[in-house]
Length: 307
Length: 256
Image (tube, rainbow over all chains, first blue to last red; front, side, top):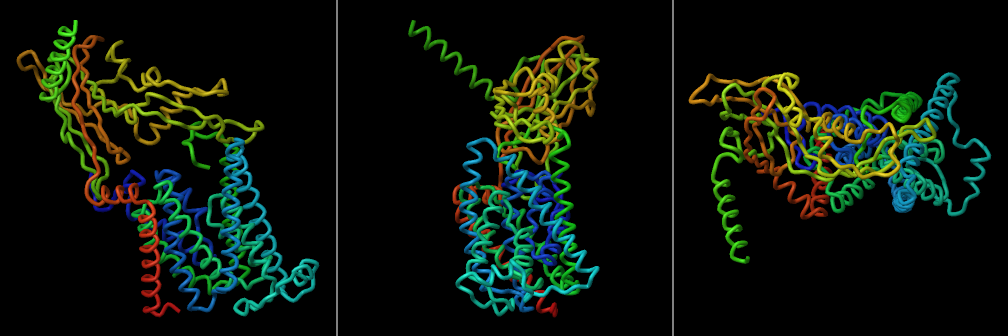
């Protein structure tokens, strides 16, 4: 049953159809390029459906995101869409938050409530972010109202009153150093709990709380995700041996090309259109997760270690 | 006493050596050969068809069974929390689980009589031991395990695909095939031929089958397990270089 269209994956311990894996990478890469998300929240469940063990799917996906986000960051860098200063501060916060998140999960696992907490966090975060983005974008499109970053709100006054203000010329904003580090930490905690890169949380945080322009948000998010996923890939390889490099490379071929096409496509879309599409995607994933929680599973057994 | 014990050990060792030389382990009524007896998992491996042939007493039906070494599995029971949400709950430990169990019969099991029941997939329930606390009363752990293994393609039961030839010196030759899945792990396995006639066992024999990783998959697996950090760094470097290369390719085509 050897076939040139099939390739054996030594870590996943299964063979896969080359075209379906490259195609899957292409579709997720396209979304990554358009929205600036790593795509882990989509890719991992799809790989599991294709027969890849959950732990290998999640770890190998991180490895392919390293390549896809390199390609995406490069494309956005050429277009002047990467705010390196902001990206590095968010990354510093993210690393600190991620470390704290791993400890929180350890404690919850000891108490026996981790799985419930993780699932609930997923559904709540996806529902809140997706719902808010969807409604806000819809309102904005209907009224053709433009967002005014200089507008004086209670939140605006609070942010302006924080110490250590600095300029972010690439994003055209002035903010306290505490904002990106604090919010980066929060996203780090959540992404460690949820086991994802955190792009789909980071993008709304940059848009609504840091008030960065949408196109700079996408490039900067990819830049930050690149480093997060390098860290995850090396940690997973060293501790759990769950990174399937061959699988990651196949996904990467598709996703890198997809990401480049996505970046070009994203430039043609209005910021509100981008937001409403991402919100729809997040809400679909949330609905699927909620369905999985409510519907009786086909088999009432699960391997240890998965979410 | 010591001499008698030594004598017994010598006989046992002699019997083991003789058994190791022959093509099959079992009684002389059944003979079996499996091809290939060594399965190499290379880069293009996508499962393999194991061709099994041999002889059984005249008029017998044949059941082929491909099994792996018993393993211990630690899993979680999925149950309802707050009467609403399906979540992973209690830890369930299964012992003596065959990591693979593929069964093929020359006729439907219902027509093979009482003795055939011992060789069915459902019989796996009797072998497996379950250790768990606080499982729901409606939770049938061995049944759920069997369903999971069937979903993974590691346990299956099928009928047909045999060629039974006419009698020759009181014996009857047969040929059958077992389709082994691509998810088969490297290790030691055993294929058995069980001969059944009139609802009773007339003989059985088995041969070992070895599955091993070769070539690039073997090299990558060793690197990943023996030098995990180096493997992770290399995986990142290749991913970054691939990302840059694809980025440059798009740039050269005037992507922006």
